[in-house]
Image (cartoon, rainbow, N blue to C red; front, side, top):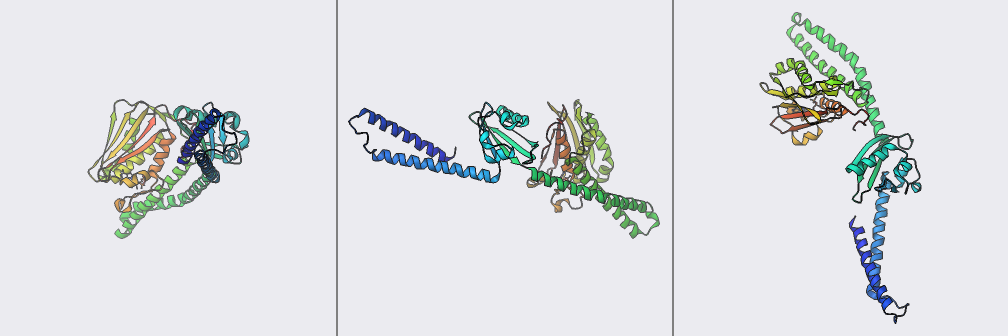
Length: 404
Ligand code: ADP
């Protein structure tokens, strides 16, 4: 409770006490005429209590007004799943009338079992939430968060994120269209450069060198375009997971094999360690391989010549865990929360000469989260990095709403 409300309650308590004492006095001394003016102390206490009550009510109205202005829906729910109160935005977002909501059960009020489930989970575990696609024109996409209160009820907060999701869709489609348009001409240029490079020994040295450079740079561009397409496909949900039983230790060996030539060129040794038997996970082997490849590619790319990169696969209680440990430059603390963002690239001065699109880790995060898993990084500048991900042994819950 805010200090003002506390003060008001305190003042009201004092006033009630004074009033009770006054009434008692009045009752016990019948000689005092009923019309006698209240004692000045009592009058002052009552005045202060009334003023405090008015201030608390005004502050509460102010906060309600602010919440309404922000368009955030707020619903107070009792422990027996009945609605105690709902503000105007909540009623509007759920296409209901606010006055008709208090007293009804959550299911009666909102006729949506997903909302009821979120409230039930919050009452059981403390917090719950999700993003719901609604059938109403008011707010087609609602972000819902619920939190248990100390009196055993819950707050339910509703936010309309339809416009945000619409803009994200437009951005994804835009990137997707551009990448598609770029892919064909770039692939042609890349193939032509490759063909020319095959004839390098018949060309003057300077020309051959320039062709080799064109080949490398177009290779980067083709990789960037392919990663953009991968990301937009994953983000738009167009890349449905094809589930199989996946042996992560086998996947680690296969991925290391794929990168062996690159590692050799960088002078980096790749090692796979499997800590005991690791149960199969239910997942999309190709996508998980792509996530691991991206982590491993970075580890090799950022390692100094002569260093070792270790891929470890171990079984946790409910999940299989894969870590990639390198002895590269590490990541500054300030950059750590950003490395999984799309297009994030580290400080150019540190990574000069190391190519990259800034998409690899973002793709890995999407793949792992689509499996109901988690991905993380531990790193200290100057001491190398450990990237890891864990996927549940039971497999992804494909009914779950993907994270934002
Ligand atoms: P990029 O194509 O730039 O490698 P990523 O999404 O794969 O894009 O990585 C984002 C950034 O995270 C990189 O630019 C780099 O700054 C940092 N990073 C990723 N992996 C490592 C690593 N193993 N060691 C040091 N920095 C790393």
